[in-house]
Image (tube, rainbow, N blue to C red):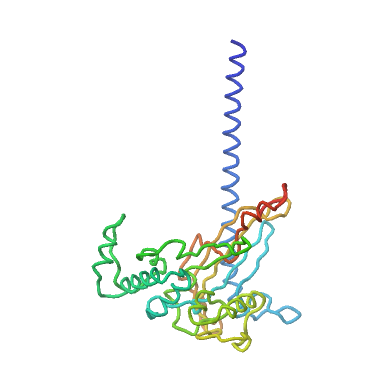
Length: 327
């Protein structure tokens, strides 16, 4: 009896210890996630302030202290972590409400590499934003769960694309694919190509999605060189491109998307696994000519970004020695 009672008490103690440990881990994860989210949201607001200050404040060597026009991203370092704020002008995207069917089809063809699917989604976008009703699309929307009706009017938010027939989260947000070496890289999605505040061209070459540049007729080699060069420094003029840049331009941006990706650091100073994102769509005017130069048009508590923190492939993860924190 004593042995059975001791075994029962040991089982109860082990179960209680496991429960307590799980609750501690859950609370710690929740706390770190909240801290990283505040870091991301604060970085968005800090990025807005840096943009308002612009290039008025400069370092002793003449470089801008905070931000200069056409700068694609800003790095911010805090005692508890780091954040990267992407500066994405809406002029670098195609206006979903005014874009021609050919432009939409070209973008979809580049992203999907599937002519049939590109044709279907293009037709669905035209049906959604057009006043004429198509029985085929309307019956499709009424036959799925939950049912809904197409707007048959202009897109009010770009997220409406997720409701369009043929659309998937991977097509909208983008995905990762492996190259010949097994390394994962971001393919980009329609969110990076279309906008309700976008343009019909020219598109800002310092922020235009590689898919959009390719869809507008830029050669693949030029697309790669542009993407690599603008990570180092922004283009000042199109003569620096070194190749054809159809329908591309520089500057002229008023509405911006600021997308912050924050990552905490652990007690040893190494990057932790806790990552959170946030973003805002803002309209920025010249603060010297406008009483209210800032207008926040949209706010996103979660704005996953492909371009800042790309995952490693399975082979790369296996190659990390034991005991070394994995990114």
